[in-house]
Amino acid sequence: MTEQTEQAVQNLIQVKSVKSGRTVEFEKSFGLNLADAIALVGEDVVFNLYEQQAVIKCQSIVRTLLDKGASTADAIAAGQNYVPGVTHRTRVAIDPIAQLVTMVTSKKITLEDLKAQLEAQLAALQGVEV
Image (cartoon, rainbow, N blue to C red; front, top):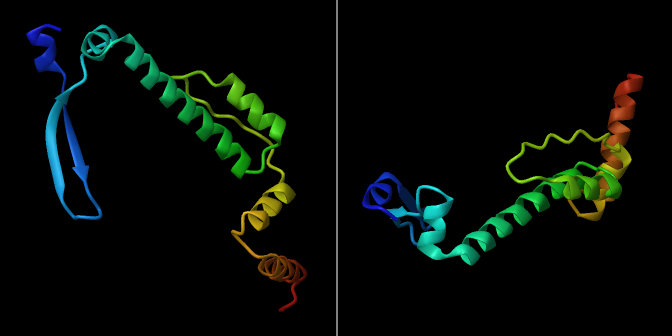
């Protein structure tokens, strides 16, 4: 890596420790481009970091769909169609029943609370106070 490249890519790294309340910051160079990154740490490291981040992003896309009640098939298809670096705006018909089941099974809401909320909404639609 050239001296000019090293000077051009100093990233400011800021780290805050919630536990200790301390903050540090420093400059660190990761290279200006892919060739510089490979020269700094090696091809295997660069590829492994790329692969790790791609897997995490793919998992995030699939998890978001599952959380929104998408079908298993739609979530898997979104994961299989994931391309790193491409914005993914997957529109999936959300099944409200599946969403409610997920909320209950993940213990975000109790069955009793869900029932009370549904009864209140139904009563409101009918113009009756519960």
